[in-house]
Length: 316
Image 1 (cartoon, rainbow, N blue to C red):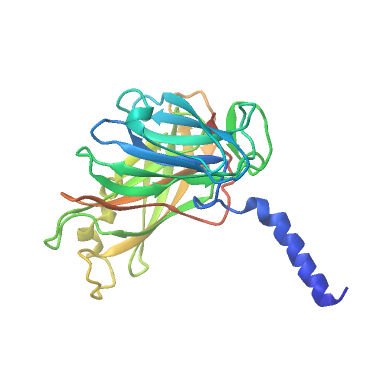
Image 2: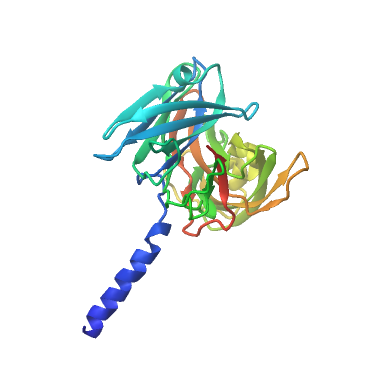
């Protein structure tokens, strides 16, 4: 074998060794899908879709809805034959008006989670008037074949792929109404993956204006949260950003802009029975709204390439 062929062979071996740790990043089929939010109120409503893209394999999709008011779960099981899709309104699927997040776990014929990386999904979110406002991809996680039979989905690169270490808001418009336009409001949606609703997840933000000037703040939540950016901190407001050393070039936008990096600092058991979790894993999304017109756009938070060193957990 020539040196060049040997080098190519070594590169291919390295790629094959690293392949199981590639992020599913919400766009590749996986065995577990996280939907950042749902609202089963008959007026609001969320349309949820899950699709089996495989041509041969059948799976059972285990829907687990988590209600943010009391952290209780509601379960549904839906069979998906090869090339099948299931689309449903949350208000039809869940008993009572609930709001929070959900996840879907692919189960094999024995009813247990398995490396059935065949599921993709998305959701469409509506307001109290029934106007559909924005869509979000489900966040897909690969299953690597490890099974511990403990009733918990572990994001540890053995059972499921690990959560990414940091999340990014790629851009945001300065919040508020400072230039005569309709008020701008962005809602940050957060899902904690710390295994218990007793934990309060504490995040730190490094936020930047459009001229690389950095500011910092923090936010804490339990299990799930949907919070406006300006309620996280006033530094996200337009009237604050224009007092900083910002780039004032004409962009045609109604407000100045920025971006932010979000990192888990710690998760603390508010009941006091569990040890502190350092660098708690989480996922999320963001939705932009012009007041009076509803949300105009929504997307998942972007992810850092590094895995979170703390294993995320969800029950199944």
